[in-house]
Structure formats: structure tokens, C-alpha cells
Image 1 (spheres, one colour):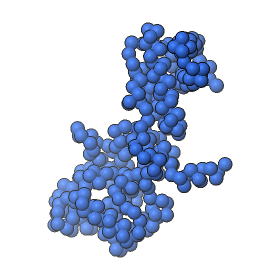
Image 2 (cartoon, rainbow, N blue to C red):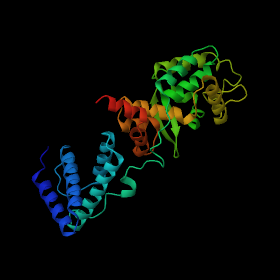
Image 3 (spheres, one colour):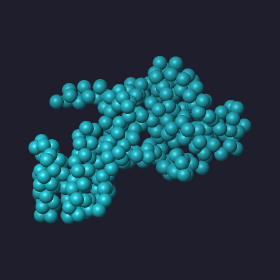
Image 4 (tube, helix red, strand yellow):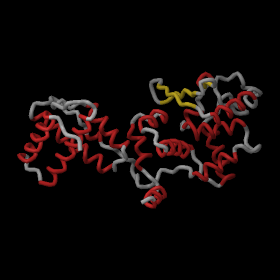
Length: 299
């Protein structure tokens, strides 16, 4: 266990006395002090000597670290509660002037019914889908749509708004416009997606009567595909392959597969265009029953 600096050790001891004087139960006191000592050890491992100046970014960075390390939601939120109590102690003892821990913002929130699993494609379903879209039955446009959904995690609303200028074939990169205020994010494109893109651009799209459109994905009747058309395509595929297929299932699969492969939570959040890392945390924490069973079998 890492030792605390003399200054941090003094503050931790003062916090313990503060809790005692406040009449906290022994177990509560031990829990709070233990949580804070672990927090201070983490903080000082980053070459910070803690002298009482708790900062907002200390709190958010620590929470993100706990999520990334796979702590249970209840454990993370208990530690946030301890930090809030520590924050109040620092204010009362004049180490700090303001609250930097905000429970509503800082606690990890899981959507209602979070114990229900986030629906993703199984490996077998993904393989079946990828095999099918190589067949002659699937147009180059539809193949591109499915690969973009699967390998970039774009929302359907983002997909239909991709413009030709957003795709950099040489850099193998896609720029996605998302949210309000002109936000944009960059998503690298797999070689498989680039090949599908070239085939579509050089064939089906080039020969379309709407070839001059600024939008990437066209239809036979329009210079821009709409969301309903994408949903109809997925519904058609669902019946053909007998696999439940809805737009967000692709997005959930994208996030979940990256996280399973050890990609950092913050990176997945950026790729997916999540406004908050807590949104991404849902995919990380909601492990499927199958994954839980396989994990136990490793023991």
C-alpha cells in the first residue's frame, strides 16, 4: 500500500476526528476514512502532494478511473459519497471555500432497468451478417450502410447526413457531425469499410441520377437517404437473416466490442460521440449474463 505524504496523513487524521465529533457510526467512519485514504493514495500517485486543495478535476478523474477499472456502480457511488463528506470537512476546516463534489453529476447513473442487458450482436450473428452482405443479393450501397453502422457506431441520424466531404479515403477517416452547436468527431475507418466505400462510389453512386448530391448515401428516388429508408433496410435484413436488427443494436455492439477489447472508456466515449463518459459506462457495467457465466468459468 502506498504511503501518504505527511500533509495528507495529517488531513486524513483530522477527517477521522471530524467524523467522530459528528457522531458517525464506527462502520460508517471506517468506510469514509478508508475511501478517502485510498483516494489520497491515488491522487498522490499522480505526483500531487495533497495539502487540502481538492479540485473539481480530481473528483471527475477519480470517478472515471474507478469506472475504467471496473468497480461496481454501488461501490463507485459509495466512494463519491465519502468524497462529498470529505469536501464538507475541508470547507468546515477552511482548507477549501466551495463544494467541488456534486452528487447529482458525479454519481454513476445507469438507465432504468439497467440489470436488463444492453442488446448487442453475438459473435455468431455478426459473422452471419458479414458473410451475407458479401453476397450478390446485397447492393454496394446497402453493404456500405451496414459496415458503417457496425464499425463506426454512428447513429442513423448521423449516417444519413454524412456528406462526401466528410470522408477522407486516403486518411481512412470519417468526420461525423453530431449534437448541437456544430460538434464534430473523427472516426477511423477499417480497411473493409474503405473497400466498400470505394466500390459504392465508383459504381452504384457514380451511375446514380443524383450523383451530384453532396450527401454520401443516395436512393433511387432521392439525393439523400432518410432514416425511414434505413429502418426499412434493417427490417428487410432482419427477416432475411432471422436476427433482431435495429439501429441502436449496431451502436451498442460497437461500444461493447471496443470495451471488451480493452479500449479505454474515454476513447470509446469520443468515438461514439457520447456527451458524458457515464453514458459509455452503461455499456461497460452492463455485462451480459453470458459474459458473467464465462468469467466465472475461468476461476
